[in-house]
Image 1 (cartoon, one colour):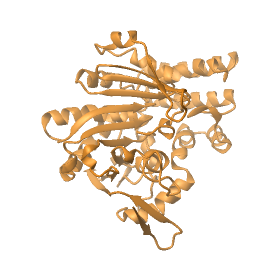
Image 2: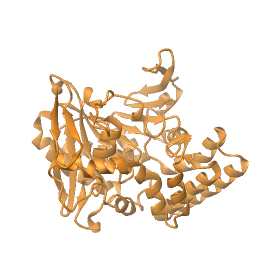
Image 3: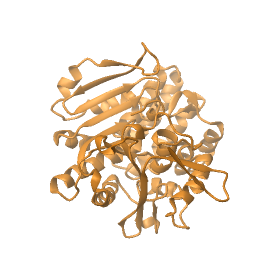
Image 4: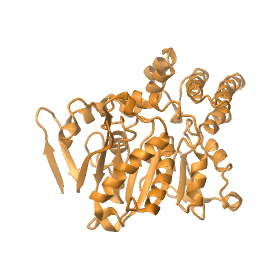
Length: 417
């Protein structure tokens, strides 16, 4: 049964399926993180796992975009989603880092600077969550992520593994899944040109232009000038757009929205260009109206001075010095510690293209890499198209890689748990 919560002065009614709860955790002085939990739609949620979902950006809202646009129980029209992950797991959305979505800071100085700080904040939240929601302490707990959320998920998973070993957090951590994740930014950028060229989206001249721009990113990274590398990354995106007539970085079979492309190309600042390409699509007007209207009223705990997504640009800017740094070494540590690590990637994604993902995997020091590399992948049938291949996968020991066909950056738009 659905419980309908009507709100005055709006034309919305909110159907809520099953049990849910939410709240804030003060992770540091002046830093307040919001979380939202949906219990699994089951007679006994304890028989199903708990999944935490982390969005990208940094600055993209899990409680907004991940919840209403991808895997939550309701879509943006507040209609029940047929492929909601809540049918198979309890789902915990966290607006992370602080300043994202409903999470907020009292000053810009309290925003996070790198993934180590992000992980430290999340440990505070998870410690309080599992101390209060004790029913989840023994349930298998997985971290799923998308885009930059995967980079944060890697750091969070390592910190959580250590916290569980020390006994400071009580939970049954079962593994991490990295979807189209920004694990090795340079490997992604350096393969944009070859990928677009191989799919007939660049000619020889365009390939030369994109390659030259990507090499500037590489030079900055190799010199340890990471803020400059982030700026050059945005410049490279401009070069890609100019030479492909606005290819969509999230799905190469579509084009960038004309308004977004013109705004990003004509803007003088790379942070503003980033906003148009990678934050605005996650905070589109309809979603913003939903989150700052009826959802805000339903939750009843959002401070009056906090606007959903209001600090998103500042979040990215604060993290810009960390944005282009790789975390491949963290994946190695996770594998060595026995943590189950799964990589899944959309075939049509550009910004985190699959060939870039394959490159960083080949750089792992993991002792199972040689055997993994020698294995033949296995085909998976598309559940919606009988007889059609929907994906390939390989798995060895505690590592798995899934090649998702006909999917872009937002893989979960076409998959369910």
